[in-house]
Image (cartoon, rainbow, N blue to C red):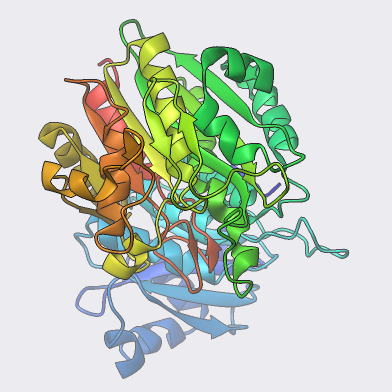
Length: 487
């Protein structure tokens, strides 16, 4: 598993700047005098750093971007990275600086001459960008070198540095889970890994197929009945406060062939990411437990595998949900909503939550609508949606609100059952959300996040190299801090 090592905080030492042998990170603004630590490096370099800051190349940089000088004379460092940093940098610039630092990270240690700069946003972004997944390689590369952070007040910086590393580790866990191949991360091995999180103080239960059958989760079980991997539901409870919990529900389709409605072969290997909603839920629960959040949160994930087999459900089958609604299966590749329907209902019946949030790599239609920049946000509660959008913007994760409207229900009305599991191509992400809303009780605040476009990207995203992004852990943690955590 990947890890985000805790950065080392050190006091200001001018001698350490000269002696550091890895990468030295300094900050400058071409419109202001050099900061003290940058000035020290420049003196050792006999003015070369100041000349670089005055160059057209540096002046043209966006705030937060950097310029590197290799093997600088006068320093032991293998490189000096100069980050353009205005005197008053907002959170977005600090994150951009962190991404620049993380993107340039090597196997050597990096000494960041932060002095009095705010650390949380920048360090978290650096740790998130310096990520690699090597678990399946025969000769894995060694991990990235550690960060050393030189600050004016080490004790004052300790809390923000520790928190940045803890959140980065939770996101790295989510990425590792999404990147893992389906023959390695099965419903069983995922459930075992979740069970191991009890060591963090979470209360964990794994519901097996016999229990799911007894509960009436036939919609979920129907998805996995063509697979040799047993279907499961994992329940993680973090009770850091009293009162009704927030329920977070994740879709955990470990691999999605489409079932009898088989997907095209090209690109099917990426369907290992169809458990992205479950991975975000698990990463979030680790983050909450690690920081001992003063909140009551229950995470639930439905773990299944959607395979074609003689036992697999067919288009035209009718299955009974835990709620009791009869669902006509029009397309077996619209399986995630069947899993969520039962887990959403179970979460409400058992825990009587204050609000429910689900995450799922649910529809290709959301990628058509929003691309890979933003997740789709569907909600029956304006305050919950607004709070989440604010939280997502605060941490730099893209999200956009999409409509819900009873007019779309006509598209999922079944001729022979109560409801059908797909309304076809028109408004595909909306009808999927309308389907899920049928399994939300009246007056229950609910939000559905369609993360199909942001869970796995083919190019670098805001905080991550291409591949699994871990989108959602940061935004949901920020939402919980703002709305569901005791003061």
